[in-house]
Amino acid sequence: MAMVPHLRPVDPAPSGAPQTLIELAHAGVTFRTRTGEDLTAVEDFNLRIQDGEIVSLVGPSGCGKSTVLRMLAGLQEPTNGDIWIGGGKRRRGFSEVAIVFQRPTLLPWLSVLKNVLYPVRALRRTTAADRARAQELLEMVGLGDMGGRMPHELSGGMQQRASIARSLILDPKILLMDEPFGALDALTREDMQLDLLDIHASTGKTILLVTHSINEAVLLSDRVAVMSARPGRLQELIDIDIPTPRTHETSAHPAFHDYTRRIRDNIFGPNARSHA
Ligand SMILES: Nc1ncnc2c1ncn2[C@@H]1O[C@H](COP(=O)(O)OP(=O)(O)O)[C@@H](O)[C@H]1O
Ligand SMILES: [Mg+2]
Image (cartoon, protein in one colour):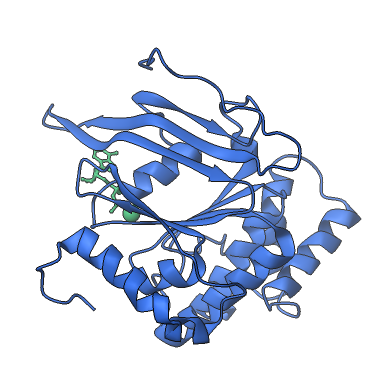
C-alpha cells in the first residue's frame, strides 16, 4: 500500500470530548480494470466521524460511496492514503465495524434467530447469554416473535430488520449501511428510517449511511457528506442543524428544504432541472 508522509494517527480525545471513531486521510482507491486501465473510484478522501454520530454519504451513482464503505469494513484496501477505525491509535479496528447491505443476505437454511446469532457462531460456541442478546435485538427491531421463522417466511422489510439485528450481535461500535432501505417500498422505508433513529438512540452506535435519498440523508443525519462524481472526492460536509429527536414532522421544519436543496444543487448543479 502506498504511504503518504504526513499521515498521523487520530489524536487521543481529551476526556469528555467526543472521540474520533473513523478517519479517512487522503484515502483513495484505484482499480485496475480488466482491459488493464486504471480507474480511480475514490480520490483524496478526508473525513472524520465522531463517536455516536450519524453521517450520511450521498453522491451520484458510481461516485465511490460503496467503495468508501468497503474500505471501512476491511473489504477493500485503500491504494492511497490511510484509514483509522475504532478510536485510539488503531489503524484497522475492523472488529468494531458491522455492515448492512441493500439486500438482507440472510442464510435461507437457518431460522431468523440463528441468522442473528451467526456472527457469534462463526467465532465460537454460542451461550445462553448470546441467545438472550439475539432475542433482545430481535425485539428491538420489532421481530420479537419471529425468531423461529425461516427467512423466506418474512417480508423484505422484516428480513432487512433481521439483518440489522444480526449486524449488532457482536456489539460493534460502528454500523456501516449501504443503501439499507433502497430495496423497500416507500412506507416500509419510512417506518425503518424512524426505527433506525430509535436503534441509534438506544445503542449509541456510530452510523455511516450511504443513501441515494437526499431527504433520508437530511432526516437521519447529524452531518451529510456530499461526494463529487467519479473520482469521488468529498465535495461538501453539511451540518444538519435540525433538533432531535427527528420524526416525519421534521421534513416540515423550515430548514429542511434548504438543506435538501443545497445538497441537490451540489450534486446536480444549481441550474439543473429539479430532481425530486
Ligand atoms: N472491483 C472493482 N473493479 C473495478 N471497478 C470497480 C470495482 N468496484 C467498483 N468499481 C468502479 O468504481 C466506481 C465506484 O463504484 P461504487 O463505489 O460502487 O460507486 P457507488 O456506490 O457510489 O455507486 C464505479 O465506476 C465502479 O464501476
Ligand atoms: Mg453503491
